[in-house]
Length: 322
Image 1 (tube, rainbow, N blue to C red):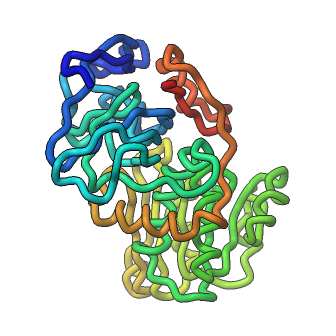
Image 2: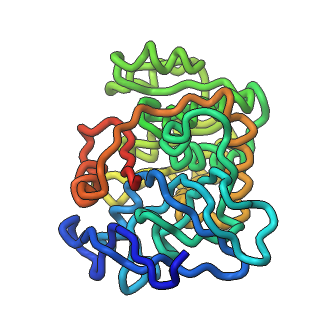
């Protein structure tokens, strides 16, 4: 490949609103000894991408920061110390575009070998739509929760992308899953193996007994109400924030019941944790069901960042690079 070759990319030079995103030409990146150069086919659009671009998620970025963290494509060049991948391999990645790493919404991306996975059989677009919510769910279920098979997990907001992946991962792990949702989503969530209850006020009265863990994907449930549904030693994991940034709870009851509370943001996950989650997803690729998605052209990158923050947009968003 010509050293001075250029590529199309979506990038920003200053944090701010979606209008900061430019679509233009940048140099094809050089690769280091342990990198692979990937011809990107599609890049996913995640909410965290919008947080990085807006500056809401504080992280080191490049002077011309290409947007996006998740993509799939074909290896076109490998560094001399790369042994797991070869030219022509179809691969995916889900941890670029933050932490000082360049993004992937471009025709080519230089990606460390340690952050690349082989593409499983099947539709690569569906797999790309799955990997971000899937990795979030896999880390929570297989690494953060300390549950044994047949214990009960309550997922608040099971109809979202992460919620549906949490249901699937938890069922694979042998857990009994209860989820809250709008009644219109009951059939789809029941088909994934969850016991479904209406998320309307009073939902807690539908629980027959305390649960072993709760994952709040909505940020809409008061913390104390969640703690009251937990068994002794139970755990609440928050992956969303409420409009009210302050919460109160009964501290004596909390510690006497040996309960646990933690937040989780996948962009803080270690490389080891992400790698473990990626391998787990690949091991179960044949049974995981991907969310619905839609494709947008590179020229619509800014619009995609607006759409991903719109709660009315239900599909995963993919940007086509070729």
